[in-house]
Amino acid sequence: MKDETPARARRAEPQPEPVLDTSGDSDEPAFSWMTPAGTGTGTPAADSFDEPAAEAPGESAGDRKASTPVNTGTAAAGSTVTAPETRKAAQPESRADRKAAEAAVADGEPESGHGSSPIFKEPLPTSALQVRPPEEEVERRKAQRESAANAKPVAPRVMQVLLAIFFPLILLILAVRAVTSPLFLWVEYNRPGFPGDGYGFSTDDRMTYGSYAVDYLSNWSGPRYLGDLVHRGGDKLFKDGEVSHMADVKLVILSTFGAGVLLVLVSIIAVLYLRKRSTGGVRRGLFAGSIITLVLILGLGSLAVLGWQQFFTEFHRIFFADGSWTFSLDDTLIRLFPGQFWIDAGIVIAGLVLLTALVTLILTWPTRRRRGLVKDHQPAGGDQSADQSANQAAGQSAGKSVDQE
Image (cartoon, rainbow, N blue to C red; front, side, top):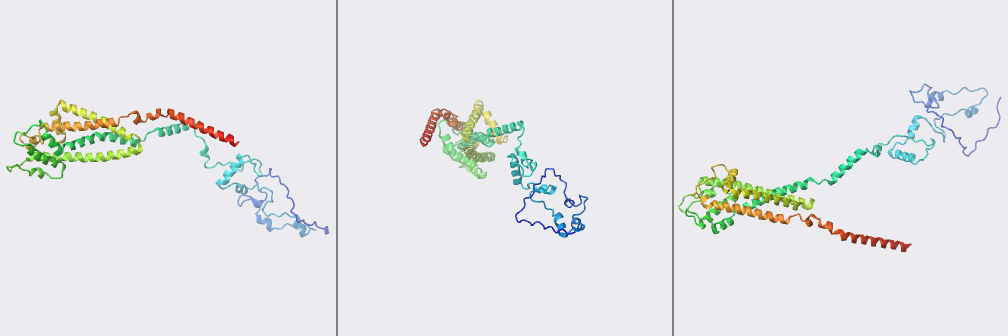
């Protein structure tokens, strides 16, 4: 029997889709063809499409098409697919998406289709930075920061120590250079009370021959500079032992002057560095150096006064070999440079160093003004005036606001 009931005409406007409640759905696929390959036991998806259903008796093809569900694998609009792969794809993949999702959860925004449950609870890779460390660790880090802020740099202190140590040495070398000059010879030979030569040297002879000896100490000539000098009679002026000793003295003098030049260069570098990096560092270094110089000169001066001959002997033993610096009274070196000459030279060296150290000590004395303590007492009135000006400015601004109202 054939059903001739007219079919209902389809309307052009879209039909409202039914609201499906998916709260009770499970993660199990609804159809066997949705199961991944190799994980399920159902029949392949192709079988459900390849084998058509048996045609019921008395049923037309159009009726079967209308009543048979179409398995297209896509969910209807408004329905929620609960497959694991679909849920994984719904999660935010980028870092910005994860942050936006966390912000939405933190603000209390409900999730569409899932109520108030969060999308995921995976912590961010940088979430450990938001965890506050223990109180002991916080206190330890705070103490380290304070100690680093209060610690003074090492380089300025090193420069101050070097300046303080080099200062007395530089003064001593400069004083020795002043003594080993023709000017000091002329003053010595012409001062009243200087002993004369008992073997016939006049003041002019001493000045001439002594100038040769002093010039030899500071020039780059060899031993022949003194070894080839002769008397009026043709005899050698200096013996071989005297020439050898003067060569040793020259080596010591030139080495001392070279060290003095190096110390001066290092001291200049230290002064330039301290002027840029340490306020008052040059003054403190020179002040400490002047104190060291005074102590050194007073100590050496006391030893020289108590026993000049012993002091002179020990000084020569430090730099020269025994027997190479002892001569007879008629040798040229003794006639040109008698004992009184060395006593006067020692007094001049000590006097120059002592005077320079005293002047430096006075100029670098740490007064209140140089230490900056005077500025701490002066701002008492300045602070009051600053407070008054601040109050006046505040009053003027308040008056302007009232006028505007």
